[in-house]
Length: 167
Image (cartoon, rainbow, N blue to C red; front, top):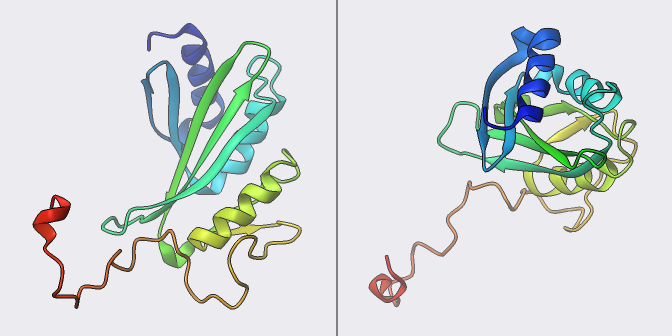
């Protein structure tokens, strides 16, 4: 690791959660750590409340979908320490059949809307969320539109020349 702050944060995470750290890398100066799904709440709480890490702001929370992978769904968290201008990315992965993750609304109130949006578009359920309902799509919608389960275009169309679209 090039960044000293990243080294210190990773050392503290390994010291407390060694069995739950799956991988860590630094790209473009940002530490990115993949952790166990069942410990994400404890890890985020530690990073927020520890006086040395003090990640006091949730910048972003979103879902991801890799349909060809065994653990095809995931959640990415971006945390920010304003005092040191330091950022960290946390990632968790799990299967579609086990799409339940602990809510962090009680740690960061801004997570309320982000978790609802992630539920709406990816179908990831956040346990303990105060109002986990669709936020942007219709309530009776049966799919989660950002999952890559359906082709983007109608595959039965014959009137298009794909070569014109770089395919």
